[in-house]
Length: 499
Image (cartoon, rainbow, N blue to C red; front, side, top):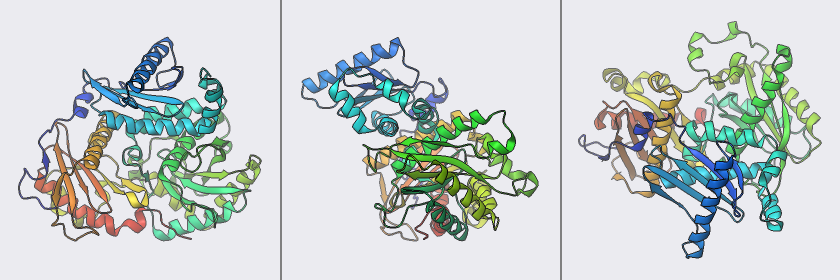
């Protein structure tokens, strides 16, 4: 990117709605509904009530009217500062309502993830079958029979869609570590997976924020990768079930809580929306998990928000087509734990999973004088590689570490991402060093509390949040330097085909 002056690549509509939302009801205005085509409520993020019934009936009537008049699917509307987004399937209607400055397009995108989690709980085939026979079927009955359906949807609505950048960029987040350590973890996971009947995949992830350490699939399975959407569904399931398992372990001995576990059904909509798999979720723990073995007090500020980080642990999930594989999954977990503890690899992995990449971790010669001389203007960044279906999201600076500020920036990223997808932005073909394609689209938005710079190249995307005092010149210069460093660091940042 090249900055000719402080007006280059600037969106002059500087005050986006996300800023105004900070002064409001701290993100609690968003609401999600799922209802059948007949207007019966299936789920409400605020709990199904008489109000839900009224709202669902109104939405069903609007949807029916839109179809009757040849307008096709009811998509949404902006009215009086509040956006309403709608998305429909052959059996269900999903609705999102927000006064947080989000567009109808952003809300409709979020509804796709609500649909994914609903499908992961009950499958598309079950919905089509039940509602095909009886359009008045109460979907809540099917949800009640699913594994922690309410908890999974609650996790999505209250945390995932509000703070997790995975749902903004449609790619999953990863734990950074050396190529050699990740390779060791991948091979050990592959060996453990062979102990499970009818295996589909083995996944290792960070506790709390569900960043992926690695995953493996049996040789010869197709597809050889797990789609980003299915990874996010699986991590949503893992977070909900692990929290439930941990709560059941409260009051038990410390050692017993180490292997809190769950074994239940989950559908991966991208792979097969009509069938279930069985997912075993548990943890493996490093043998040297005492506090003296840790790398220092500085990691206290990097720990993810989870009580589970009191020990050196990593989450594991084994997916299988067999409903009888619980004991085999336990054996695979134990074998994996023993293997990774043999040379202290598990300790290294657990410490890496507890840490997030901080701006201060970037070598001084990369950001150079810009970060020092301009009062540390860079607050957060996201480096996205769509072809890999992965991205890196840095830790937020302490000045934006509270939930309200994080949610505001996440919403700003969502709006910026939509703009970069739909609009041409400002093209600058002078980037050095050149990427696979020379032309890049650049957009810079000045806001009250921060500013956001987006750059989309041929095979990468980078989004950066700065203090409002940062000039375009400084923002572009830091972006260019950071891009080069991230590109070179990709072997340690992302998962690869290691076996």
